[in-house]
Length: 502
Image 1: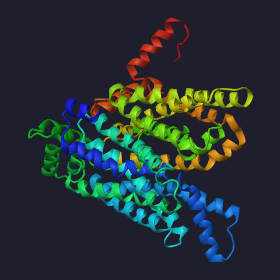
Image 2: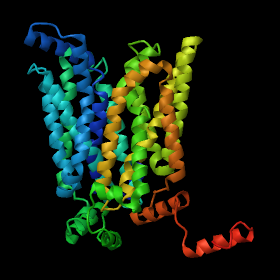
Image 3: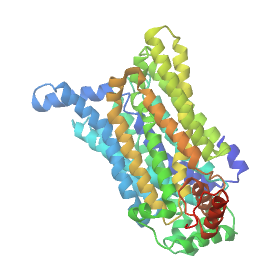
């Protein structure tokens, strides 16, 4: 699939290397850490109990054990929030590529702590390692889409940007594969190798990314280094004549002389609808139940009556479906249809899951129906991932982009943490109807995007801003100009509905 697009869109080796290795050390690791904790959960719990007994001479209490495990899992989101807060300053100081290179050190540090925690008899090292890994993910989920969006020509921006979403799914899939009972998910002495694996993608990124160019837009618009920007464009585009692209960046830079702060972005009426769209999309993407499926896949399948020996392989199939579906459609159908189709399909999928689970309680229903529902829902849930992370880089120009990614990242991680914290309680309170909450969120997201989001495929950043404004004006309380107001009054007078004193 990638080689087909490589040939058709004339994507250079330099551009492909930036997409592959940038995503490998960023998006891939985020997806991997979402799924990797499921397999060794029992072994980590046993290790915590044993360490507690050695330290304090008494078994750990059930409440304390549950608290430590919850903290170990959910602290990834806390670290992600910290990373999202600092990313704006990192990309301004170090650049987009520079931030990704420095960010690799966080992954290596986390891998060391997580892999050696058992040998050091310290469950605190696992918690700190997950926290640092969260910081890495928070930076990566903003810096990488920003980098890929700025280095790609508009004709291949969707193709290059999709590596971010696809590699998240590949990371989830890899964590599921390595966690299988036949590999590292069954032997108690090998679970730390699951965490040591984190170092490999980070090292691969460090071996390639420093030798690739920085974002040309960053170099020209923020560093004011036109020679370096032109050189970077030549390498990314694979040709000597880059005058057209350079002129496009110059034209954008004339209107964007200073990078704005988050507060200035929130106050700016010119991008109010763009900010609202990013917040709504990021929130709904996290609250749509996708992470609940990642965090609690095994538990959901167990509750549906599937045998324990089969559950890991069903989860593995869902990961494979995500990779295929997200990679085939994103560049063909555009961002807007992809997002609307994904959220609408998930709403239907959650409703079908709810119906099946209730049928299982009242009447008999084939287990194959449930598995098809899960597979179909996972395929549809992978569709928005391709568009959600590209949107932020496309809806904002250079001056607004760092602050926009900071806002989007903060919303993403707060929503992520909320789902991980609240879902078990919702599941206990609503039982089989819990997925209807997610169906409602998906429906609201689809309706909003259908009404307010313009298509951004194959458009320059200036074109996107103009089309976004044109699409929003009829839907807002825009003021009429003097001529339109006089025309409206004349029409009303013709119907005798306006007094002479007006």
